[in-house]
Length: 197
Image (cartoon, rainbow, N blue to C red):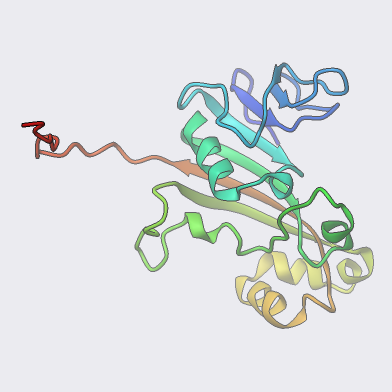
């Protein structure tokens, strides 16, 4: 799922396997394929807009603060770059049986980073444009056609999330987002200065 050759790819929480050519980041050098050792709950040790793609595969659910993590990913990714993210659906047992999981997410959990009714959310300037979403179900529901319906019709996915997901349980979600960055607007007003006199 990486982009063309020459793309700068960052693999967060790479563990022992990372995408070919990617820069792997993890907190443990001995047990991972990491090129950079870093705490993923802290600011990432990279400059702004240096990566074409960031991969976070089964990472986001472990982090302390989803908002901060997405903000950092947005910061280090160029405008038009890609965030590829995989995480369990909250109805999958693995979401709850791993005690290191802090977050239990669904297919709407990242809509916060997209304009709602044409307006940006007032809590964040970070913007992601969802390009792809694939929901994986267990084999029985896949063979019965539920997975196809969920992945091909937004209205059916909404119906599934609201009414069916505790029966027809999800397994994992695979998101591809485009990173949107708008040019910084400079203010005409001078900075406020307080006089000490």
